[in-house]
Image (cartoon, rainbow, N blue to C red; front, top):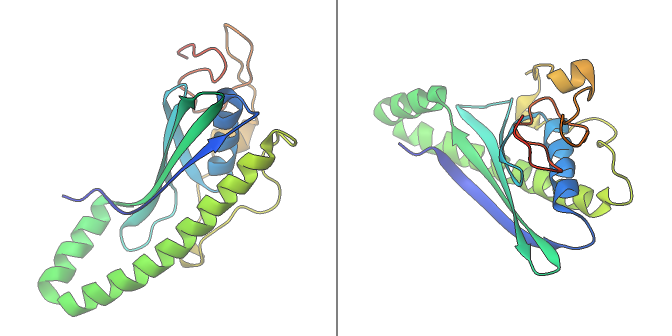
Length: 186
């Protein structure tokens, strides 16, 4: 079964910022925009948006690599097919294939616009993070198709950032599995 579809990929070199700062900025930005985030290593994160439509949910993957004096930031944004989406797709294909194709085309256009907006916003936020290392301000972006859906309140929103790494004291997000500064497993 297809898990990720409509994948958009971007890779950019970043200078004058540490890997830890990039990961902190990425965590702030994507959580602010209603993505649940998890870290599979100190320099790799994945996440999925809380909103879904017609069984599609946006998901991200960010990986950092050393590229000499700069850091390579690899960003992928996909539409993840949920279990609900698989059922809708199968029923649609069996009963009304033309309608399923039309719905898919509309979903793709909406997804593509939302994905491009989120990716552009991420790069803009990341480039300015060194000067202003704070969580994004204002209202998070909610796709037009998600109007009326509510994202769950995360532990970060409930408690702020009370956790600190037991080894180095780095302030941590509630869902971190590794410290972004020293790499200690939490």
